[in-house]
Length: 186
Image (cartoon, rainbow, N blue to C red):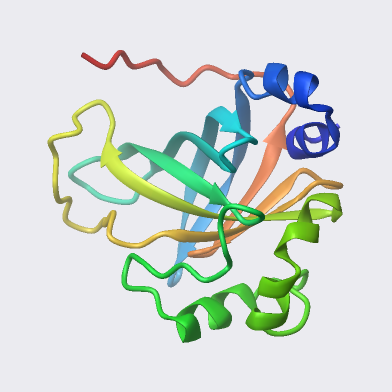
């Protein structure tokens, strides 16, 4: 059963236990005519706070860093986080344009906004993922050919286990855990 399907349908006690598990997704990110291998490693989910965090690992994006890993956190759309971003230079128009790219997004932004509390029972989970820094060296502020300035609009399909996002990200849940390194923060 896909990760968020288990989380979204779990009772509060079960959800707490599930939120401590590691979850891995693999896929591609497209930028223009280029395509990059991506692994997303979700490390923590907090349903009470409507957040999650993890690492985004991408190969071949830049020559300087042939393999990049960034730390990201996410806002899960629902009772605590709105479809309206209202930060990171996003406007209501930008939000509506990007959320509307998802087939599962029904109606207009303000209609969806009025019904966001009902989303937990649906087949999809909408989120925003924001990358914050490079791992393991969080002091790197800029990388030629890559940016942490924006964020991803994300739609997770609980039935299929697939994640789609704009900036053109397509991921599938990986059943078996693969290791791609570990980091220790000091």
